[in-house]
Image 1 (tube, one colour):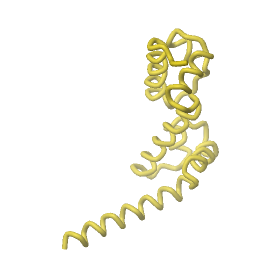
Image 2 (spheres, rainbow, N blue to C red; image 1 turned 180 degrees about the horizontal axis):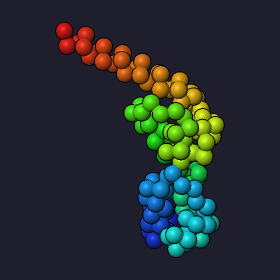
Image 3 (spheres, rainbow, N blue to C red; image 1 turned 45 degrees about the vertical axis):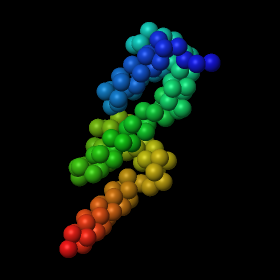
Image 4 (cartoon, rainbow, N blue to C red; image 1 turned 45 degrees about the horizontal axis):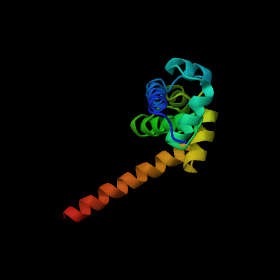
Length: 127
């Protein structure tokens, strides 16, 4: 059964809200209330539209924020956790590893190495 257009709009409103407020934690009841639906409709509609749960979606969104902060700051993981919506660095590391198969610091080192190799390759090809 397809999702009604009005229910799709409510799911999209929740997505926009979560992406703007990713640092905070909300229950399904709170999210449903914000868009004028019930928890069950929200959960089912979200899964139909995004092929993942609300929790999986916001966790992956937060992981993206962690990656941005890893590449643009030298902040300790505790600070990155606080600024990306994870309750502490242990939860951040657990979720990051689940998503990438790497710890945040190993991921950062690998990305910096890959970036250096890319720059070297482009310099060589320009010669």
